[in-house]
Length: 198
Ligand SMILES: [Zn+2]
Image (tube, rainbow, N blue to C red; front, side, top):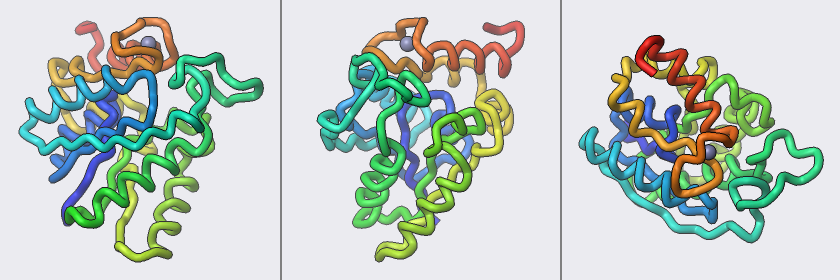
């Protein structure tokens, strides 16, 4: 089975890149403010791991919301970075990208703590998989880390600290801000995964 990994350059997808060595890694520029930082990290990490890395540009910024668009979150948003249907959108784009290129398994880096978004829950990933399977192309969607925290996923794949530090998790800009939800999550996971090293 050939695999394609949706690679944001964050810790979760980096752990999957390191541990599962997919044939293709893909970073999507969907109009997020953090794209430059994400693609820089993803390209460097894929290069260091000897993995093929592609970039797909599909500007969906006109339907984006929240910190990933450099805006205040909508009232009632489940998180500051909430972007409606984002995972659905990215899985659809990555699956469509995969079809003429060979991979039949799409890996996504959801972890257990993503469950505060409805689109980060196991039932949602399985529904997405069913939805793709109702269509031509025979693409399977898998989220191997969905029952783990980021730190557990890093340990599961024995990701060394010098690889993990290549990740980029900031939601708000091209450089690490140190303050947003993504940066907080990064710090927390690194401290948990590498006690005494961070
Ligand atoms: Zn940040």
